Amino acid sequence: MAADLIGGVILTIVGLIAGIVLLVRHFKGVPEREMREEPLSETARQHDTDMEEWLTALKEGSIPIKMLGGSSPIILKQKEELQVVLPNMALWEARSVRQSVGGYGGPSFRIAKGISWRLGAFGAQSESHEELKAIDQGRFTLTNKRLVFSGAKRTVDINLNKILSIEPYSDGVAVRSSGRQKTQYFVGIDPKRVSVTVSVNDRKYEEPFTGLMLQYLIEGLIKRNEEANG
Image (cartoon, rainbow, N blue to C red):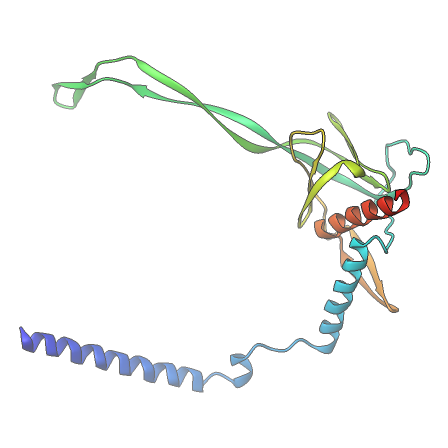
């Protein structure tokens, strides 16, 4: 027993030494530049700095954006101006889905090989949970006063001062507003087709328009309206 234990310990030590040797050989063969993270170029650092500055200004309401991907079906009210029009957007909402879960109650008795008889009646119970469902497809319009979705079956009109929260996604936003029980998801921005020109200190970048940009634009418009009314 002792000999087996000693033999096992020796094998473990030999295995560890062999692993360390292989690890050292591996890293000796890896170029130093691959072992450390490549630093960002000056151009990339400037781009990141400019984008952070631009997004901050957008959220503060300091940068106006007008990006009209076609005409808007809505009739503008007094002192209302178009900011963004996005075609081919989808409206999603949470919907309750019910399913029945049930079975037979009572004890079971074996009456033959592979055959059992269960006493009791079948009982079913309805369970409900929510799932996101696509509701409609249409055009998304943002003005300095409201957000409007115009679809074939549904129209959603939300005053910006009624918005409680916005959650960004890569291709849209989720909006929760007072007076509405459900969060509404406006998604479908195509980054390959929808872009915005970012300009900071005479430096310009053509960037894909994202849900985060849309969120900050809406928040900036809300802040400008509050300042104007305050």
